[in-house]
Amino acid sequence: MKGPRLIAAIFAILALLICIIDSLWVFCSKPEDYAANFERYKTIFNWATLLWFVSSPLWMVPELFQKEDKE
Image (cartoon, rainbow, N blue to C red; front, side):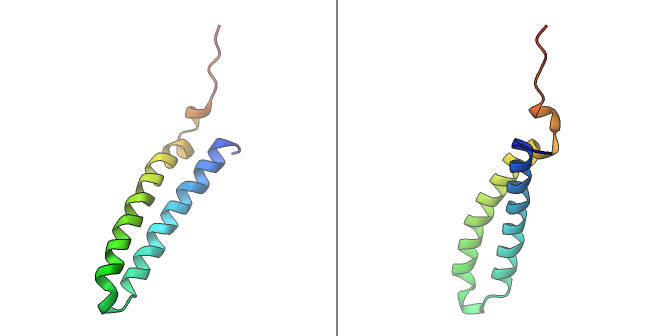
């Protein structure tokens, strides 16, 4: 795996890590900071989910990067 698939794999894994780390950060935050942290969490989670849904098919479906032979 190299080239665009490797880049897509890095972005997909990074997006999943962001979702997990941010979820744990909100869970471990102080109760008085929860509302503000949860608003931040929703924004970050939406962007990370979008990044994952764009990059993971490019990583997991190798046929997307194969060149077609024109005969």
